[in-house]
Image 1 (cartoon, helix red, strand yellow):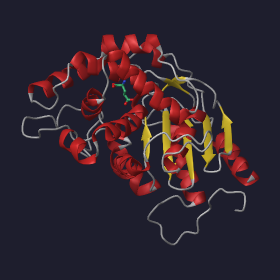
Image 2 (image 1 turned 180 degrees about the vertical axis):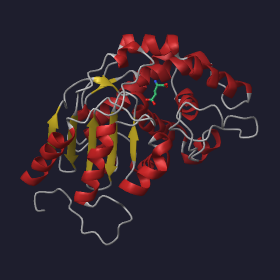
Image 3 (image 1 turned 90 degrees about the horizontal axis):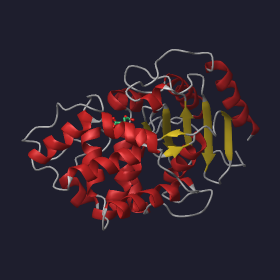
Image 4 (image 1 turned 180 degrees about the horizontal axis):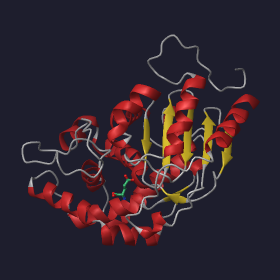
Length: 318
Ligand code: GLU
């Protein structure tokens, strides 16, 4: 599929000069990112990769980790048990909003905003904090296909500046929404946000979800196929901060973004795609990332509800 490679290169050239947006600045590690970093990676279900730009640059996964930790909690508890603890309602509020947390709700709204993500992380099973971290890292490794590491300086910065997240955890504790030791849940949450990945890694992770939970490069199962539907559903409705509705409307595929500038999107049964570019718009989504996905979605007919489209499966026969 030389055309796919060519198209990605064309998009890279078209958008690399776009310097709209701002770097995340709430911790020094993110503020130090290079505004020019830009990578696009696509991994197909037969394990082939098309990519261009800074696809091997390491950065911290941040909020994109929420998708995979939710999958782990689904495996640990099952859909119905987990639903009692963490909802699946989109909020339309920013990721770090405290607004929806009140006594009557009994559970945080969804696992893609911070409150729900911290509660979800707090549920991860394990004998002690080290065991829980090891389980979480092994889970991410199955998606990536190689060892992953926590960036210690980002973790320390997240931990020392995360007052808002700590406040959310305390509120949830007060409302009886969580009952685990909250400092442990917060530490694990800050650690999961600080895992280093590349744009290529994110595309493989997305392709694993597109492939019903089996990493198409290593053929290793990363998550039970019965959980993929639930993971993709919350990504679709809640994955792009308070732009999730418009993203779903325009692109029509499940996706998740993070403050370090990654966007990971799943084209079910077809491909996983990631874009990395750290300049963010006011919602916290990568500006170049949005532009690339808009162009890709149009070119290859990604929108799940555009029933008039012929589908390109990115397989060699296409
Ligand atoms: N570590 C960040 C936080 O919890 C993640 C933010 C994000 O990527 O949305 O505040």
